[in-house]
Length: 97
Image (cartoon, rainbow, N blue to C red; front, side, top):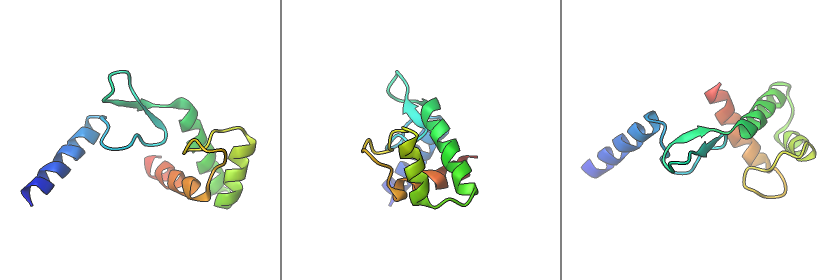
């Protein structure tokens, strides 16, 4: 039980220092030192588009099609944006805003 609490505390501390704690979140990239995170301007722009289209009432699938037609690379590196990826990013974009 003590290990669990220490691990959680350390992960929170890493996040507070701007270091990676798990996967690199969309909208950020790993800095040259391999530890800290820095903003990724291209992905931040995609997040802004998603936020704007979601606020206008567009469906997740329609937002994905819009991103695909705009040539914005999919989150997972695939050919197309999945509605679940758009949903996850839109949730993160609204919590970060």
